Length: 257
DNA sequence: ATGGTCGGCAACCGA
Image 1 (cartoon, helix red, strand yellow):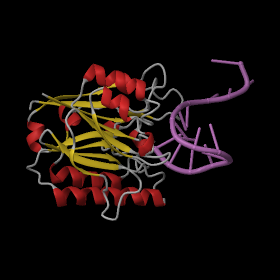
Image 2 (spheres, protein in one colour):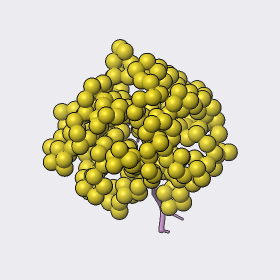
Image 3 (cartoon, chains in turn purple, orange):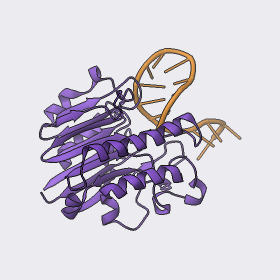
């Protein structure tokens, strides 16, 4: 069995107690982290290695940052989505236990029509290009992370209000669809075709978590050979700890390897 | 009850 998970930590240092507790309890083989919000020199390598993980990361000051934690070493590491380099620290890929892993923190996009929104679309186009260029749909590939896009009405509270807005816009969804259509399946959706499962609740909405005003914007996408052997998937709400809750959940899946 | 999100990092930006 191979256990794979993804988690937008929103600061790996602030979330470290939750993270270490969760790793001990769940012992995933691979965990993708987004929004680590830490420069490489300050990444909490020691406690995570003591917990039994190899750590591969790319960070920057204040914003973004990604990491892959793995029981076995990550090989063929790449830290740049763009050929000219990825200053924004939103991408890390590699191979571990015979599986290619791509961990992404897709730009949030700010507002539709803004420069940041355009950059989000460009980023998704580049991600598609990266996948098409380097992988084959027959490979064992997982693309996981925070995509900042909800795909269907069932994946966001009050879809009518959000339709056409950032995170729920046709242009974002069309690019996501292209990535899916290349040969990647939303593993959680496969196991839970019904709605009302969210992975994110905006801090800014009063009592948003309690009122369940959430979004499903975190994904584990897998190629057919892995989907065939995927046992189940689930959203783990451990990160809603009483102290310092995260705005995202852990998303987990298991493969019969 | 006259307020009301987080995190980084030091004034505000980003989510």
